[in-house]
Structure formats: C-alpha cells, structure tokens
Image 1 (tube, rainbow, N blue to C red):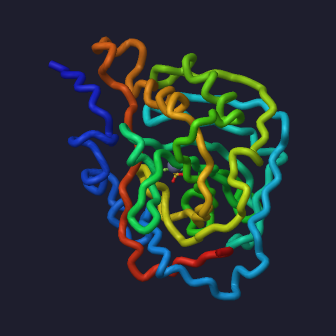
Image 2 (image 1 turned 135 degrees about the vertical axis):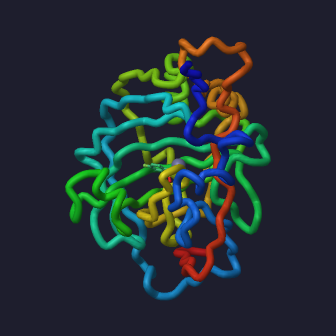
Image 3 (image 1 turned 180 degrees about the vertical axis):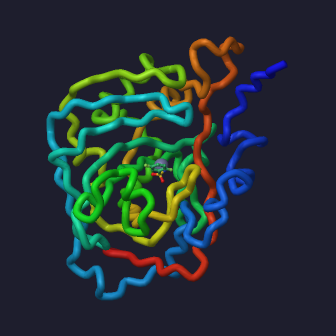
Length: 272
Ligand SMILES: NS(=O)(=O)c1cc(F)ccc1F
Ligand SMILES: [Zn+2]
C-alpha cells in the first residue's frame, strides 16, 4: 500500500516550516545563517568599504524564464553579460536568478528585518562567483560562492512599472512547476533603490539546504510596490495543477524565513 502524502520536504507551514528545517537540513542550524535582524547600532562603518560602492551592469534587453518553484516565482536569467562587483566583493559575480519573499499581510514578508522592523516583501538578486568557480552549483558550496543583493519592498500607491513586466506573467505560472519564457527589456536599475547605501555580512541561503555560501548585501532604501502587485504574488500556488485541492487551498501567501542570530559575525555598512 503506497500512500502518496505529497508532503513537501520543507516549506512555510506549521508542520514543515523554518523551525523544522534543521531536522532534514543540518546546515540550517549553523552559525552563519540568513536572514538576520539588522541591528543598526551594531553596524560598523570601518574604512574597508569607503568608496567601494557596489557596481552592477545588467543588460537592458534579455530573454528570461519565469518559473513557479512551489515556493514562489523565480526569474532565471542567462547571466552572460551581467556583472556585479565592488562593495564587499573581491571578484566579479554573474547574475543567476532573482526572486522574492513575501507574507500573508503587509506587516511581515521580508526576510531581513531592520531594528526588528519587517517590510512587506524582499527581492533577492542572486549572483555567483564566476571568476573563481565554473558553475552556480559549485559556487553554492563555497564560502564566497554567491553574492545576493537584498532589496526591501514597501507598499506604496504606485505600481512598480519594471516589476509589472514580471507580474503580468504570473497568471501563466499559477501552479508549481509551470514556467513561461519571455524576452522583455528589463531595466534592473529600477528594481534597485536610488541610494546605493547598504549593509553587508556573511550568511547563507535562506531556504534549504541553507548552504553558508552567501556574501549578503542589503540595501538600506526600500523600493515601493502596490498592494495589488503583492496580491498577485499571493495568488501563486504551491501545488501542481494536477493536485486536486480546493481553489483557496495551496496559496503561497507566505514564503519568508524569520531572522537567525547574527552571533559573532561582523555587520558592516556603507553609506549613512
Ligand atoms: N533566498 S536566497 O537568495 O538566499 C536563495 C538563493 C538561491 F539561489 C537558492 C536558495 C536560496 F534560499
Ligand atoms: Zn531569497
């Protein structure tokens, strides 16, 4: 008798959420985990980052694939002519993908918090050290393998026009496993805040297997998205089309990991 419990290995519900991850993914209990609460009084602005602003160059027109991972949407880029350098980075990193985390209500949803404050959502642009390693997969097993840019998102009256290009594709990927190929000109510059001021620290992937391979750079200034746009995120489903469940079930209303202790890690900042 084979019972298909279809239970996810991990997720964000009470029985498979962040507090249970370490049972199957021991790295989740490590001392260099992400996200963290950014205690601004602990941030040091030593001279190591002075005039080392974070530099990115992304293409204006590119083809992308957006996929419903079951944990949210993810846009896979074909990071050929992308480059991230400067700031805390010693090498040039290539953009692999970007995705988002959000909550069921607007007073939660970001993964990093600032002095205990959550934002409504958080955008992650994931890069890998293509100077030292030969693939994203290999880089994800190295302590300096990945560089993730974190951008806080708060609710404003206006839609975010760049994000709208992605949101318009979400109705095509409502169910887990669905994907959509699109080539659109995405101005990444407007997915990032005007100010380049940031905090940086050494951390991990915020989902299992929680590898401790990320140099995190979190921008201080949030970007704004509209409530409607955030509702579209929440309309995604964590189950496949074939999983017969009630229409309201399986909705991805939250996919963020709460903060872990910074421990004795250094939190640096660049810019006021
Ligand atoms: N949320 S994250 O940016 O830490 C992340 C990036 C990946 F490429 C894979 C898993 C992750 F959890
Ligand atoms: Zn993420």
